[in-house]
Length: 242
Image (cartoon, rainbow, N blue to C red; front, side, top):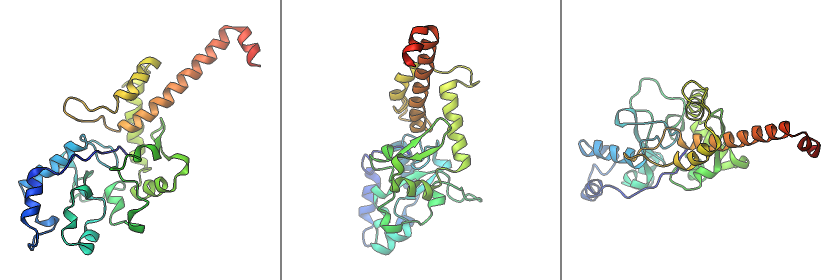
């Protein structure tokens, strides 16, 4: 999961929402094209082209509107609250897929236990500090944080298919397409900060946070290998180690 910084609702969306206050269509179903498509694309752009939950690459055709607090609960609690911009993100997959996805937004469904208090939102800065990935693409809760554990389980972020996709992305980035060109330490150290920067189009690298965490692990591995070589070359160092 990557932290998403909200920049404020697009003007056209805000104006439309104000125009329907008190009307029968004051709900998300009242959002129609072309405004609906433009708003969808704005959310994707705001997220740097990544699914808010899984960090998969998304486009308009491969994603849908997701309400952090389920849309149905919003309507039950307060008329028009399902239109709140701060509750809306874009997620994989597209709406209407014949087969439900087994992770992410589809896995979450209408879950909102304890009013969502233990859900780690991608809109909260702490989301990147409570969850960690390793070089195998596996996802872990930092210090067994209960909120992180619940979020991982709710979104099924440890799904085998998703884990394998992260592992493949990590391997290609760190070891090259053929797996025989591992990044040296200095390049890896620079890459840790570069990997989470958007490109000229404002897009982030797919699974960027997972790759960042894997780079830290990769550097530690390189340092361990370097230390072993150092002791192997100098018998005196081996004696000191003992």
